[in-house]
Image 1: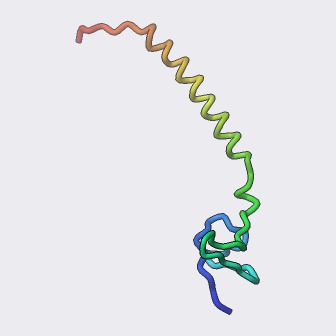
Image 2: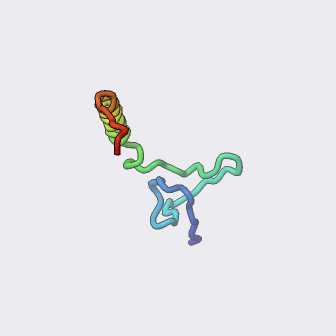
Image 3: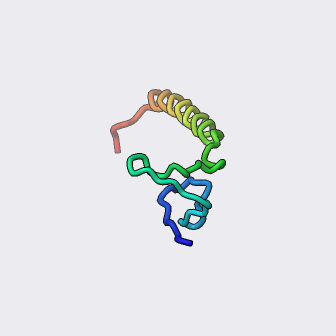
Length: 77
């Protein structure tokens, strides 16, 4: 049986860089038609967490800007 080296990183048939699908269909224009995204790659939980984290950073930046405005800097050294 031939071994097919796959360049998709999130394919469900991928095992250590080698395709494990019983049958592979390739299209010269679009690539592998057998490709199926891994269930772990389809999760949206990571996107939600990233969005919440970026909102927290934005809030912290806004608070930080107010603190800098209140500080008095003496030019004496």
